Image 1: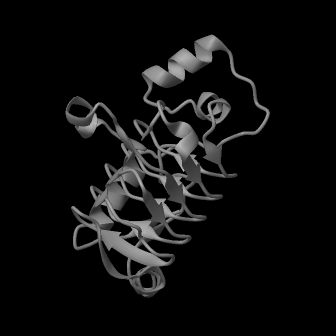
Image 2 (image 1 turned 180 degrees about the vertical axis):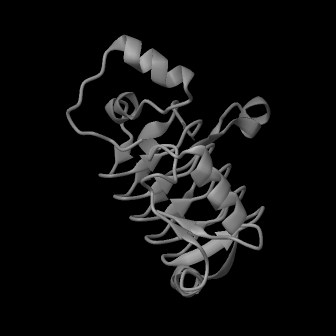
Length: 189
């Protein structure tokens, strides 16, 4: 969900959003979360509500569905009497793939891309593509984007209008997309 500054919502709408798995970013910002502009937070994402003031998310960052940002780790609590905590900093235009977990005391640099299902335990530098458990650098995000830009020249592309749920996709367009992708991937706006 994109953060809309100054858009008040009522308690019923907050409850509806929570039941749909949408993060209530306004409440987290009130508690100290530093949230940039035009940040997308996917459904079922979790931004540590108990330590959200230790989290900073840069402008135009994307948290795909099911991403967890955990600024605390209670594994030490029973043994030491203390919970481990640490800051999480996510840079501008960073992308964190679906189901990824970002652990305390980590930084993800500007324009970094984190693959789906990754566990980020260490810093990921600016402009790096990283994936895995633990997340490891795989290359530069600019190279990754260049490969896909080149693939878009020969692979199917679809407009958002008419070919996405938000764009009102019809059954004929669903069938068209399925048929076009039978031998590989494509791209949708």
